[in-house]
Image (tube, rainbow, N blue to C red; front, side):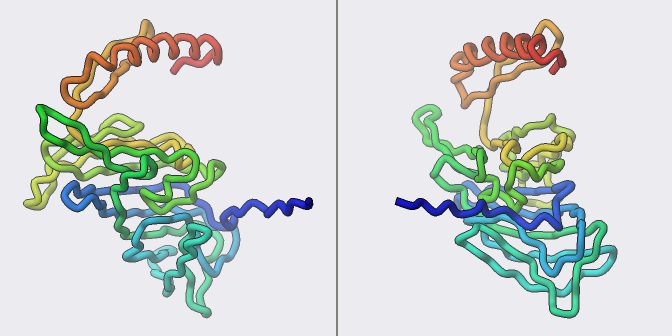
Length: 256
C-alpha cells in the first residue's frame, strides 16, 4: 500500500508577530471569556492579508493598522485549518515594515482540559470554579488568536480581569494589581512581559488559591499554589522543584 504524506500546513512567513498585548476577562457565570489583543507585527514583504490561528473563538472585530492608517479589510475564516485571515481590499496591500493587528474576541471556558478551561472543586461542601490553561502543543489558539507554531516566538504582556475575590497567576510576576476603573467590582492583574517564547509556553490560571513557599540555596523563590485547604498536598512538588532547579543549574551551567 502506498501512503501519501501530506505536507505540513504552516502559516505564511511574510508576516510574523513580535509582541502580543492580551487582555482576558473570564465570566464564571456563563463559562465564557472576553478578549482584546494587539499584536505588533513584522512585515517581511508585501501582503494582501494577515493570517493567524484561532479556533473555538468568535472573532468580533479584527483589523490592521500601518502607521496611522487603518487598512480597509474583511475577515475570512478557515475552520478546517483553524485559521482566520484579515483580507485587505483589492486596492490595498501591507507594505514591508511594522504594523499592528487589533482583535476583539469571545471564547468558551470549556471542560476539555485544553485551551482556557474550567475546573470545579469542593470547598466546605460547596462547588467552586477555577480556570486554567493547557496549550501544548497547539491549543493556545483556543484562548487567544496567535501564530500558534513553536518556531514563531514573540514576547507576551498579559492582563487578566477577574472577580474581586479571585487571584490570577501567569508565567511572569505581577507588575500591577488594582481594582477596575469601572463599577464592575473586578480586579485587574497585569503581568510583566515575558521573554521571547512560543505561544504554547504561555500559561495562566484564575481562582481562589493558597500557597506554600520556600527558597532555593541560591535564593530563588519557589511557590506551589493549591485550592483552599490543600497546601499540604503541594509539599512534595515544592521539594522536587527545589532539587530540580539545583540540578539544572549545575547541568546547564546557567543559573535560573
